[in-house]
Image 1 (cartoon, rainbow, N blue to C red):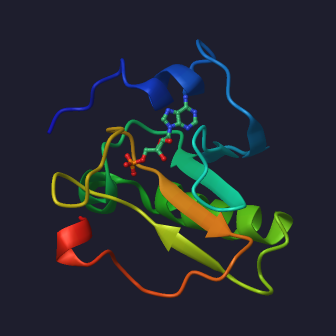
Image 2: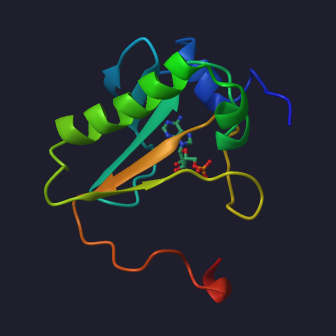
Length: 123
Ligand code: AMP
C-alpha cells in the first residue's frame, strides 16, 4: 500500500492541523487520541512516512526503528504508566481495522484492561 501524504497524521506532522502533543523528538511525535478509549490514550507516530508496521519493519532504518521504539517507552514512562502498567496496540490493515494509514502505536493506561483481543462476534 502506497503512503498517502494526505492522511490525518501526516497533516499533524506537517503542522497543518493541531494535536494535543505530549512528546516529540527526532524520530517520533506523541499526542492524545481525539476519542480516548481509556483514561490515558496516547498515540505515538514515527516522523517518517510509513503506513504501518508492515513497511516500517521492512524498510525503516535502524536509527528510525530504535528511535521510534525508544520514544514509545519514554512516553509511557513520562505518562506515569510504568507502574501500574499499560497496553500497546498497533493495528495493521483490514482485519485489525486500521483507520489511519500512518503507523501509530496506541498507549492505553489508567485502568485495568483484562482480555487480550475482542471476541469474533464483537470485532
Ligand atoms: P486505528 O484504528 O488504529 O487506525 O486508530 C486511529 C486512531 O486515531 C483512533 O483511535 C482515532 O480516535 C484517532 N484519531 C483520528 N483522528 C485524530 C486526530 N485528529 N487527533 C488525534 N487522534 C485522532
